[in-house]
Length: 445
Ligand code: LLP
Figure (cartoon, protein in one colour):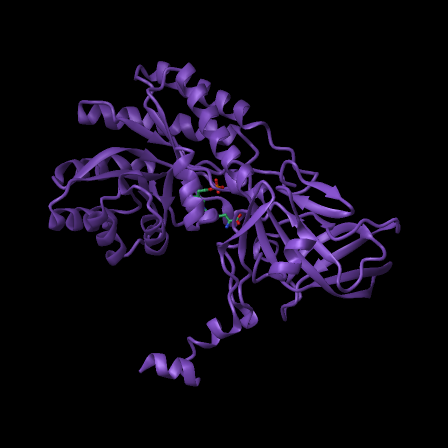
């Protein structure tokens, strides 16, 4: 639950605002993001890495907020004010970040298939660094930069071969996956980049996966990356200026998760980078990281209204299904990754005994689970409000219109004042795109 969440007269209060009062004004479901918590976490992770790496001889640290976790114009503004850069990975994220006023030179542009139009837009806008993911992209970005008469700064994404202990779909740096370039192929590609006058190689990049608690994975990845970093620096006759170690720092979704404090993670990582650089006889490079989930995840809460409660006979007893007015369209993570969440009754407290329930969504799919197992008061009934914690990251950004469900709004709260970051989608929004309907047909003509 976001820091400072409390109960006042039975109502769950986040960031000083009462969830039932918000529901009365904005309807349900909604995603509420506590601005103070997001900003505090952005500052905290930046300062922890800056301090840890400064203590271990790095010339500086750049923190890129991974926009894929949650990107709205206000979030871009908060990151800017908290002195974070932004990492985008599609033409859409790039367009939003630029439109929201992010300085282009502070953007990192990722993706294994950015597409030529987005590459051209990025080069023209003056994006700070492109992270190149394949030999084809090296040529594509070089050509776009040459045409635009620019020298584009680039990083090379490396698949470092570390098996991060996380869900298979979230691990990104073992061998058989689509991201990055194998360590053994990197020297040839780096040499090719050096031949191209429109590109400047500023360093290497890796990202071993997401929602990682096993910090040995980060250290091992840094060790392997630094060996390659040293090798490429030697081949080029000068050390590469920077090294980007990616994101992936895990957060607590339920009481069973206990991530280490970020300060400790930063310290240990900085110490192992320093030790490895000493071993290799190279200076500690400027370090970049790209956290997304860690910054916004814990700051978000989704509130739903309960619609039905139904006991279902299962082996050895019964399971109580509590169905709410959202589900896999606003939070795909349980269905996609088997992710666990925790929920609370948000509009009142209850003295009824706690029973183990499953919170389900309203979609036509049995995998449409919001919280697979949660203790809630036995008297939870239609009309009650349920809040689900830690939904700030990868919920809005992964939301869909499955079953023609309009996406919920993203609201922000600060010192009790609530405002809309992204408005609720309407059924008219959805119908308007259908060229077979009158409104859509008019638009299509
Ligand atoms: N950098 C790169 C290159 C990435 O691919 C990602 C995440 C990040 C940084 C940020 O990772 P974070 O710090 O947020 O863990 N939809 C999944 C997560 C996919 C992450 C994709 N890449 C989920 O909901 O768990």
